[in-house]
Length: 322
Image (cartoon, rainbow, N blue to C red; front, side, top):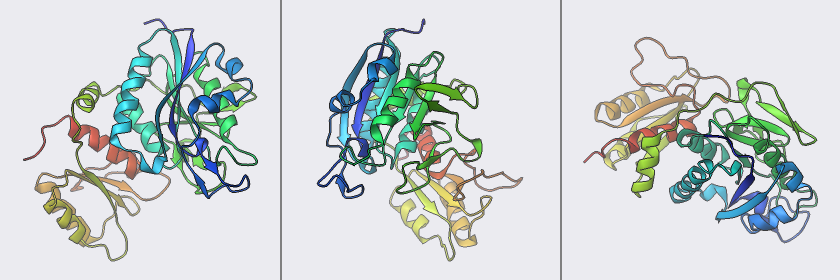
């Protein structure tokens, strides 16, 4: 399919970037998802120039991203799929809250075909009513990335930095530059509207077409929970979750996938009973290096929350357990 030279489409889902506070100086006591995506675009000078052509806006949802759910993900994946198949669309930008941006980014990267054009997530740490809001520049930069020739993949643009969906992670609860790509480092930067890459564009992802099919045809998603290893961890919560019908468990292990012996035994029991288990690390940098004889599957370098998404998609493609 020939890449289009037409429009950039911005899909709004709410978040702090669309938030309002009662006082302009209040950067934490605000309500997210109050300003429409159309209003956000209208307030940014130079946006059409950054888009290198037409730009359109659509409201998908208007929520705080801490409340992101499967219904919004389904709608977002469906609309992105339609737009990416349209030869008149050069790229898609999604405005999103910061709290779960890394999860939505990895979900979209797992199910969308972005080999020829990008989906770029934009966000803000300060509401639209702040004295110095960061949302307008982030959105302007995201549009510039989406319009850059050759851009592809699911990306996030925050504080002038470009991150890939696999590596992006929120690492600070307040500061404007709140995201990191960890050991991998950023993909690149946006400088005065121009993209400078540290690495090439990410390799094309292999979309989970089976997942898209099941997402479109089911409203009953698998239940996958995230647990953490810690001092004194035991297996009672695992046993209770298994009794309650959980489909999968991801554990944020200590160090290189280490687990308290009681928690490890409970997870092995769960795995033997048919519950899928994945082991990630709670360390913010690095990945679990599997060892011969490991009893439980590891997360293949994904953070606990992203390992949960991959496991969700795996389970969606399988028949549900009775």
